[in-house]
Amino acid sequence: MPVSYRDIAADLRQQISHGRYVPGDKLPMLTELQTQYGAGYQTVRSAIALLEQEGLVIAVRRRGTIVRERPEKRRITRSRQVFRDEIGYYFDPTAQSWAALETPTLRWGIVPVDLAALMGLATGAEVFIRDRVMGDPETRKPKQLATSYLPAELARGTLLAEADTGPGGIYDRLEEMGHRPLRWSESVSARMPSPEEAEALNLPADVGVPLLRVVRVTTSPTGEVVELNDTRMSAEEFEIGYSIRRHASARLSDADEDGDEEDH
Image (cartoon, rainbow, N blue to C red):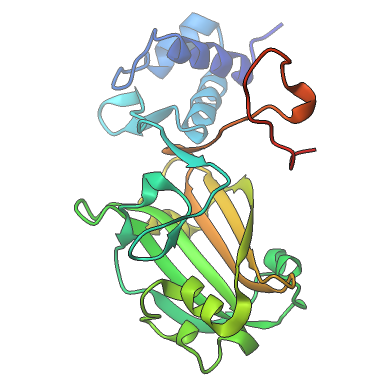
């Protein structure tokens, strides 16, 4: 049975995974791979193209196919807690030192279809949108795109719609407007970036790097959604980590542990 391009890609992928080829190494030339696998040119080329799509290799002019350097993973820890410092609330200690790298983009717009239901809004409803590019203020390297959506009737005519929302940011303003204490819930998913997102995060143009997406919904004590934050970051550079505690039903009788009665 003739070897398929998927078979060739799987073998090369395994060799890269096992360290046979390390970042910076050059893979054999296409003609050499043809001989090695007894396959035609197009089959071998399709195998390399698949590895390129996966971000494992890149084609470098006059050098050939090179195993790609990949950034070291950083863990974004979600501890199911919200923190506070002199600036305001924050949700990830790893990112506490990050700052907006440019003035936030402010605009009135339409809530995205996939977020309307989460906000309890009708499709096509107007919202106020705050876009920020977050990153290390010293290196100026972008790390996250953070977009806040606020119901139009809530934001209009308030500091929520101003570039400078004041000490404590939008969450302090929301609590001052009577929505205290705020509550939050999050969901994590992944998707491919738009061209604009890839450019803003300096993702490689020739490699399909997916985004990690953390959507956080802010509600008032009555359950009204007062803000939705959509944070996107490179899934190649970041991973989401959670601590896991034993529920009371899994507690060991001879161990001194704190159970978590809220998880079912």
